[in-house]
Image 1 (tube, rainbow over the protein chains, first blue to last red):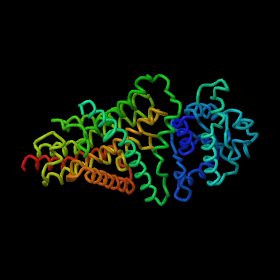
Image 2 (cartoon, helix red, strand yellow):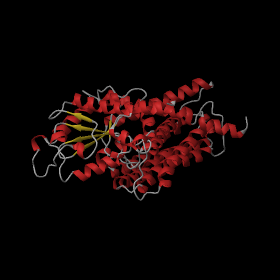
Image 3 (tube, rainbow over the protein chains, first blue to last red):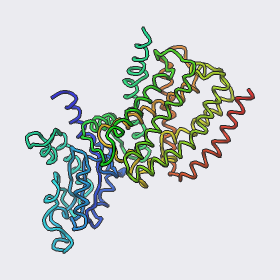
Image 4 (tube, rainbow over the protein chains, first blue to last red):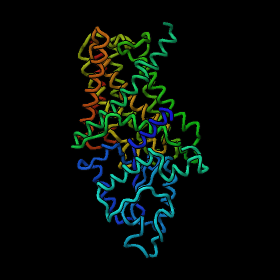
Length: 162
Length: 302
């Protein structure tokens, strides 16, 4: 492994830029994301930056259940993020639908059926420490090339170079 | 040393890209760290801007549909090249490039190229937010360039030359004070920091003019912004700080003064809220206009 590619993989762990996406959340998880950037938790210490556009992001934070209306938007935004990328699902909703499961507008199954999720952060809502831990885990996976996106892009899987 | 090697070493090594890029990353880290400390946070690690740059280099570029790939890649390269060329002609101590008769005019033109590239980037990428940002940037540049150009032209008029080295060695007068005020007024808008962070107002228009940019082209835009910060701080020091006769202390003094100016700009950014475009424009044409008029008048009288 040449020194440049080694530097690039380390930099993926050191600078995970985050884009936040509410797929149909009750806003509880989003309220817990905000303190991550406050003086108390200060995510900038581990290089996290919050970006409004998916084009600048490495890690996609998705909160809430996937609804019939948000499904296409979530998939579009995931596809707009340049590879390599990781997805962090916040709270119980993306995994199971939580208390909204069975509603006619909420899609069956989990978020993983639609886009590849790398880290699940449990809780309803999860604590800010746990969200930061999830982002840090995703960043480590990006360094090791262990995210599902990187697996799909690797030459062994028939994709291009990551 | 032949002229070719002089220019090559000035553009590539000192004060060009090889020395200015670490300085630019240091400046970006300094601004972010100072901002964090002022807000009671710990702030990013020392190497953070470098890691950001490397990470962006390692990503795959996504070009929006309907955007020409040539223009998408050319704009950040042109911006970076022009800032590097501008750095190479600043008479920093130890700069191997010989002094040219009209290098100040060349420098002023080169300073406008990155702004033009950002405006074009906003329009070319066909994002509505990018277009709003580009429009704001174009209008704002009409505002801040009044005190900026007037202060530099007043200095040139009083020194009787458009040569940077003559300006650097010109005796001090009241004109320097007025010109420094005009220069400092324009600086926050040139660096797009807070009271005038109108083109990159992330709360209103998501991001700046490179909203659709990603991966390596975005990294080059970020690098050219970092170099621009270094360039403007160095230019302030060269124009308004006495040059010490020894090379190394002189370079260090210039860099320290540049850092001090950057600290002042950051302090201002953290203690003010963003103004509207019309307010910013009025500020520059009213108060900036008064300072410009006084500086030019002083230059003509003395």
